[in-house]
Amino acid sequence: MSIVIRTATVMQEGAGARVKRLMPLPEFMNFDPFVMFDHFELAPGTGFPEHPHRGFEAVTYLFEGEIEHRDNLGNVSRVGPGGAQRFTAGSGLVHSEMPSVDTSTAGIQLWVNLPRRLKGIEPSYEEAPADTIPEIGFHGGRERRIAG
Image (cartoon, rainbow, N blue to C red):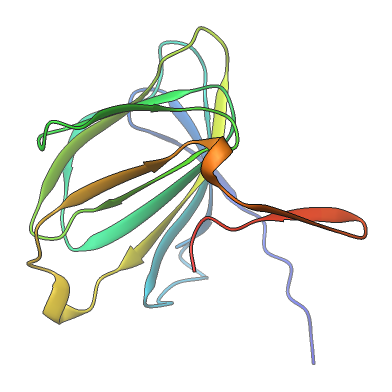
């Protein structure tokens, strides 16, 4: 068995957001149902202004700072360190994710492709503040289960 170490590609997304993308990359693609995996860093005044999505689900986990989610379903929420949010774009969702504090904001986001039979479902949104996510300690670390 061989181990391959991949280096994320640094790029700009949205409005000045710095993203380290692990996948997809030209040499590391097509891992359905996983569409994209990013680590993002947002300085004050940067972020992801209003934009559309459809056909997938995204889970975001924050390490530091705070992000405000707004969407065309009327959802407005703020998620802070250790918190998570999930949206299902389904048949279509327009949303924004912008820092709501004047400090740096950082987190990870995983996009998962929906199966064909679910691509047209109604979009939805859910937040999970840090204090609602179970944490399990183990020798040498801790685990936080945000899905599954």
